Length: 403
Image 1 (tube, rainbow, N blue to C red):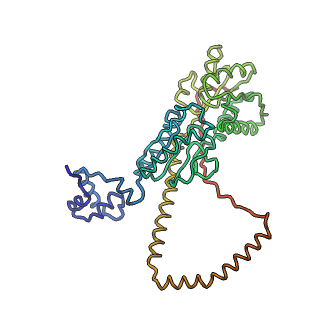
Image 2 (spheres, rainbow, N blue to C red):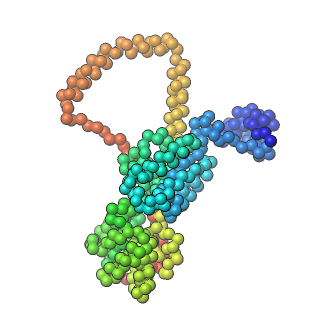
């Protein structure tokens, strides 16, 4: 069976091929609703499928977004991807996902090894460029300041991480404000003797969340005591090992910087007949599925992962729209220049020749002035790319009692 063409659809509907093209490319303002409906019905009957690659080559855009994830197995990643895909679907865009599998390949060995990351990141970028994606969303497994390859000539937005050089736009969780909210909640229940089980000390999540906790203490007039903070790690066993320290210290509440740490806390308390929500209070962070399965249910912070992905995609659409506008403007300028007459060009050339001597003299004078003011140079730094911060919300369950 031969492939149906635009010309055949146009002939069946009694319209021009350009009218069919306008319908395919969603330029509905150029086609009446009745005609559009007739063309769509004809396309459906004939089983017509637009050639997206050919359209992309012609329009220099493919309505395809590349998504690069550090590891699809990270619990935060699927919902961020869902947020990206949801916005793309609304706009009629397709998505292609590249999974770098960084955690699966190398566990945590790649954290400070940019060569490891680039060995899989650059090929992924090139594959997406080969299919002419309109932009790339890069989704990290954990927040940090990362080095992303520059000059790839494709719009890029970072999600759940930020650029070390601040040259790329990003969408991140506001860890500080989110931690402030959960600590304010604990304090609001009457607790003042509060412990904190954090992740690694040099981890950006740990640092920002601790800063939020300190701000909540300050606002409540509670003295911050460093000995009530344990930098343990992020897994259940780290929480378990840290619990005894706080029980012996006699704190009334413990804020865990993720739900898995809280899981270790729960296990220790269960084994030692300590009742959470009565004898001691505890909160988590992340609102993983396991949080509501604990007994009693864990009060925690929900990260708006879908919103993170959606905001990243909306930011990328703004960038691609700006790029397209610049391209259209460049084409218009080029067309205008091409229409100039030879007489106008000659006149312009004469004018340039007349001022050339003056420009040379001015340049020489400026050079002398610059030499005289050496040591007072000022290089203006480029304005940093936008960074959108998304705040988490407290999910109240039964693990915090009033005192």
